[in-house]
Length: 143
Image (cartoon, rainbow, N blue to C red; front, side, top):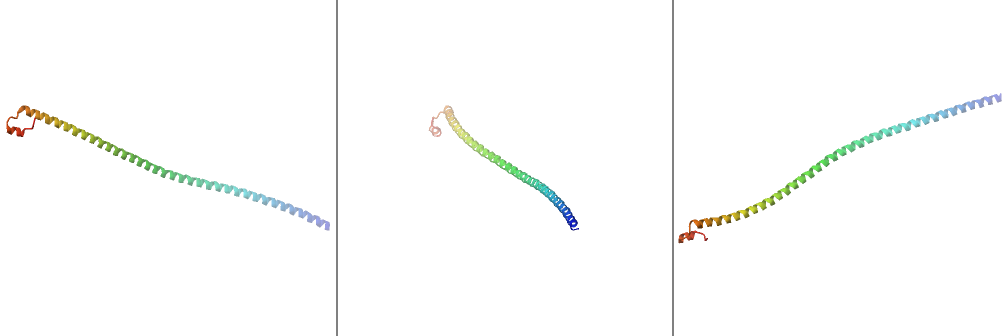
């Protein structure tokens, strides 16, 4: 009977060992499955987070580009305004110089014309009324 009890005990030990091995295998598979799911969820969360960060970066970049474009447009307008102002100043200076030359030339022409007119007037006066009396001589210019 002792042998039968030992056989039964050994058989029970084998069954328990088999059940324990099956349980360990099932637990190991469960843990592996849970680990795979955790890794997959972590990857999904990482992708989602990266997509959100990328979208945030894109939004920041677009806002930065919009601000830069506005500033560049302002700078270009300022450069054009400065150029236009410089051109106007230069044109005004050139116009002033030209006007000065024209005025000087006009003064010279007027002086020459005045001298010529005075000469012609003396000549005409000399031909029309000869200076004979002393009173006329005082009033006449020398010929």
